[in-house]
Each structure stands twice: as structure tokens, then as C-alpha cells.
Length: 206
Image (cartoon, rainbow, N blue to C red):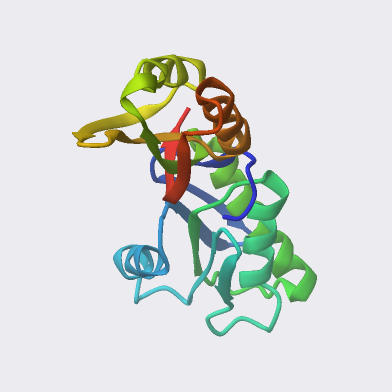
């Protein structure tokens, strides 16, 4: 993710089923952190005996979907659209269909796939994820006392401290949106002597 907004994902897997004009639709959704996890979930829940196993995932800027034999644009894209409308991310949804003998038409298929996917996501328990950045902080011995002030002020997590012959080196996690303010606070408290660098992204639940 490249923005600083809170991400809404699922807390755990969810399932929803509905019969529409004698066809049975089963939607299964799960939180995923990678494309590999999304495809593994597909392999886990797909039903080979079903007529279709259509799916979509969204992980940050990465997304993909499949109509799995349904007419183009009638299944995978509506599933993805259900995710986008509900504002969820890092989610994989698989919708399995058992054909009941009545054709739904393109519009009917899109409404069915998108609708059951939306219902599944709506019923699922959500979790909020705060985009977080790992920061390294270098302080001289005369300024080591400010570390704990910064930790408290910015609700830092995963704090690790190491003393060297030059002072204190610390790594900690803060909200990505706080990084510039954190760096300014460290500079103000040390007369510009503190060295603050970002070393990588992490995420944490609110």
C-alpha cells in the first residue's frame, strides 16, 4: 500500500449461500496477505463438481479475477466490484455455482455473483489495519532520555534499543502517517542531532 489510510480487511473467513432461480451460489471470503495466499484459498475451497468456481482478489494495488467459464464480465468483475464498493482490501472471494437449469442472462449473472459476494463480505467480521513504518533512531548519549518521550507520544511498538560507543540506536514501529512529525520532534529535541531513517513497512491491527 502506498497511502496512509487505515485498511479494512476481514478478521477471518466467511461463507454465504443463496439459491437464485434454482442455481445455488456459495460465496466464501478470506483475508489474504499475498497472491500466493489468495490462490491457496481458491484451491482449498473450490468444488470440482460445481459448474463454476469464479473468484477475485484485491491486495493493495494488485487485483485479479476469473469468470471460470461464465460469459466474460459476468462473474469475476462483479465479485471484485463488491469488494471495492464495500471498501475492503487484502481479501479473496470465491463464488461457487451449481447450475439449476434456468439461464440467468448476463445481467442476472452479474447481479447474482456480485450480490452473493457482497452479502458474504457484509456479514464477515472486519478488522482495521494501520499502515505502519519501521524507524531507526540514532541518539547521542546526552539525548537518550527523549526516546521514551517519543515512544509515548507516537504510541510506538516493537521498540528495540542497542547502546554503542556513540550513543543509542533504536528501532521502533509508528504509524506511517506520523513519520514526518516523528522526525521533526526528534530533531527539535536534539537540536537537529538525531538521525531518523525509515527501514521498512509493517502493518498492525487497531
